[in-house]
Amino acid sequence: MKEKNMILGLGTVRKKVFLLSKLVGGIIILFYMFTQELPVNQNSAFWIWLTLLIIVVTGVDVLLGHFISKPLNSINNTADKMAQLDFSAHCEIKTNDEFGELAHSLNVMFANLQEALKKLEIANTQLKEDVAQERLLLVQRKELVDSLSHEMKTPLGIIRAYTEGLKDETDEEKKQQYMDVILSATERMNGMIVSLLDLSALEAGAIKLSEERFDFIEIVETVAGRLLIDAPSVDYHFSYELPEENFFIRADKYRIEQVLDNLIENAKKHVSDEGEIRLAVTHGKNMLRFSIYNQGKLIPEKDLPKIWMKFYRGAIPQSDSRSGSGLGLAIVAQILSMYKADYGVQNLPKGVEFYFKFPTIT
Image (cartoon, rainbow, N blue to C red; front, side, top):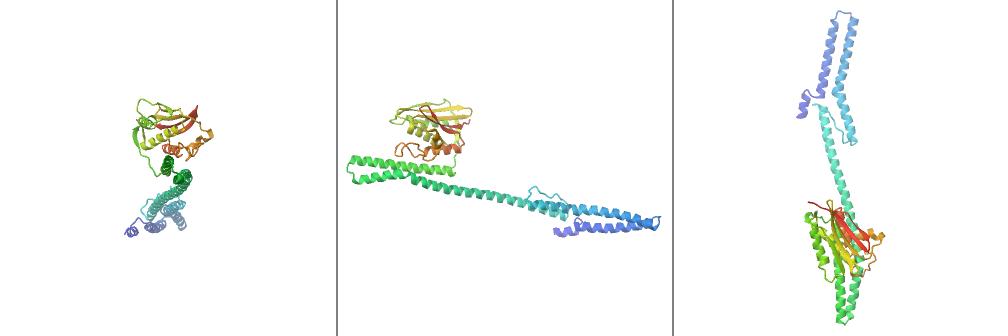
């Protein structure tokens, strides 16, 4: 119905050209009749008519250029830009004829193409991320299997050896000792598996950190009291320095407690006999600094970056009951990295200090 109205109406290019041609024909006839009536000879009348004809033809050329050539050039240039995927291309023709309809169709088509390309780009980016994530998961699965198979050799070897010893042992006291060793190795394996799975989930982004506001000083007091002050049969000297006022942070409370647990446990494992453990929390401009120092063997400078790696134990023998899973500091590093928190370790006189910083809130 719209096309029919355009063909029958006066706003179409076809109708404009048709009317223009009729108008030009009529003007030429009128000019001819006008020159014939002029009081001049035939030759002069012809030249006057020819001059008027040239003016009319020039005017018609200008009108055709305005109605046809100019819109066609504009549409052609826009179509060429669109072919080159120039997203700034836009046809500005706003007439009510076929050219206006064509320009509008081109603009709509290019807008749809642009939107489709953006969606395709987003889908392609998502696909790349999914592929990268899948590759990362495959690498982490392989790393998990390799790590477990390597780290399980020692406790499994201990369990096997002591289990075989139980078969021929008749001394009840030694049997109990063997059983204690087997249980200790089993607990170590269980802790290692749980820690490794937790760390792998954090690295893969499978675990999302929650957010809540809580008092950092209170949680430090709770963890330190449980692990250092209330610990039975301690063989170290403990001192601490905490602010008297409360300081709040926004973070995953469980994960921050996990960080504190692992750092304090690490200090307990490596403090020398009758050595000192010193805990401190200081407050600067909108920032808390937690540190824990243990007197004991210094870490070689070349090994300082390695201590955050999985299963790093330095020179500690694998059979040392205090060696742990070798995953505690790796979990600390992963959690603090997820918060983009500053953390580190440094050798001090007669011992080692671990620290991290965290922003405070009101």
